[in-house]
Image 1: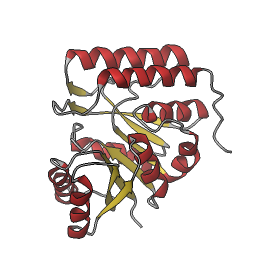
Image 2: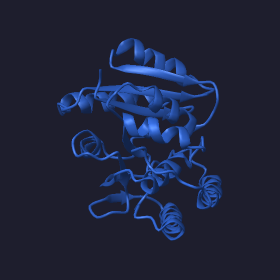
Image 3: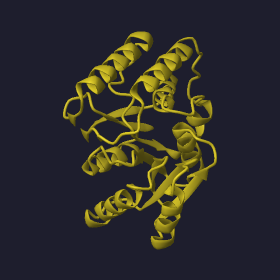
Image 4: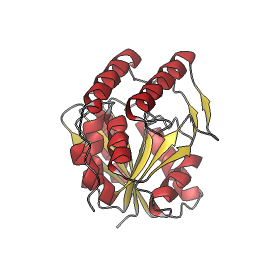
Length: 240
């Protein structure tokens, strides 16, 4: 049984998927990553050749597997992949590998060695190094400020697509997450923090992908709606 599943959610990423998976596998092998691992490609209703490329990778490499959902939704794909996993912990990252892979071991250590329930990559904590547009910088800082004000939260970055969670925490928290799109990350972290789970911010090296498919305006509106919903939601404490 692998100690760590590494999930890559994808939607219409046929043009970059193979190169990214091969880069990730090479990094894990060449650095002698200290945990046994498996790469899981989570395809959510791609309409291009993404699924075919994913299956070709699965046929080529015994440590790559594919999860396919016929419905679109990044959060929906992540929830299925995380809940289906039999690994001790699961982490996920964006297919563009915007977060430097050197940050993967500290993220994994947090949940597999240091006793945290969740670990989240943070672009806004001490030690992080980021390169991104002014618009993305202002938007991200504005949203995290809202999170802090509305929920008295200590989280420094909820939106970085680089997170890890233990199998136990995933099975307790993910059925409570209602969002199936981009607010999934923020909702999961707020449920964890307010529910009494141990969450660690991990500083990252992060470079914005100029080919990013994220619709910033639509994502901001979704985040605002999600925060309003969460503001009046009763968040349960973790099972004793």
